[in-house]
Image: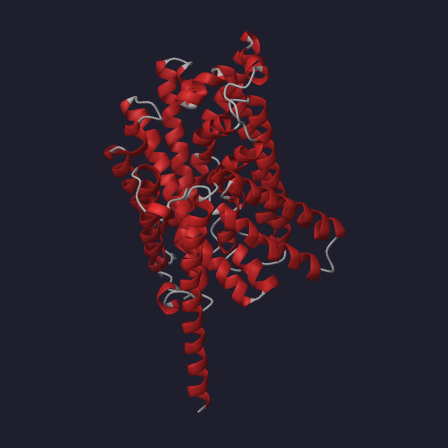
Length: 459
């Protein structure tokens, strides 16, 4: 059995988009954005707008693609249809072995980080919250729990996604509304936006790179298009509506944070310093809602991770296609693919913690929360170009204008990543190349096996 049931409606699909993206990045990347701008709050607002514009443009473009192609791999379908089977395979391989599990592992850590803050009342930038034993243990626990829910009870996972999305908007809009109102009344917001730069050497490009992780994840919703009811109608709506909600929520949250705390405090203590201004009780409540928000994002990412290898396997590609294309008859879930996804996220979590906090891996150290973006945007480019060439029956605005704007956005994100990470880019590209070469080896072996079978059948 290699088919999945249509189980998710429009509301769940929208919540998948919003819930996968919103929930972690805005909470811990807001400080990074401010830091990279040298404390220039207004420049930080511009960085969030640019990053959001790139996401909205790409989401709108892929919404057009979603009306035309529908199988089991979302962006893999688009790559395969427009650029050929081999290219589609390498896109799927990258998503399955690097992008999905790396993002999921970081989300497990972020969820654990804010859990430690909520439970023990420590600062979000303290060593205990960043890489203490409690944080590592809780991160591992969250990975296992999210795997179990998505592998054993996929319907429950969908319901959790809807509930978590509603809950996760609460701290965003509470901080946004209260922060903007209070900051406008007492002048803090105006002072933050007009104050002299707190630290020298601010960079808009580097700040835009920081927003990449916060805005990433929307493409993951396309990985479940085969499980969305009336996907050709509902997925485009989910992508466009979801993207608009995300950008609005992020901008309002960032302004709210600036209204509650001055830039010097935010640079030193992180966004939780803004929560503390509401008092101990409300600060604790907000921190707990942030944890729920992060877990909702983790749930959505794990959903995609558990289906990554499956999407390749049903095409007869990847690691042991016959094994990882199996779907459990009781849960209608690809358990073998899910188990491999859990293993990959555990390995990426080990790498993330070791490289970022313990000084391991030497010259191969890089930030796995941001640098996979360096390669996913270039991977979009051939898809967008092929779409412009081949889709002759599509309206010119959808065929040329949207994809062209998306290509510009891809270029901005790649340049921003290189600008911010410098030499780490080379380390990442070496790891990326090694994993892609491994994928090429499996591709060769599987196609050779198919050819041998065809020859033996003819004989």
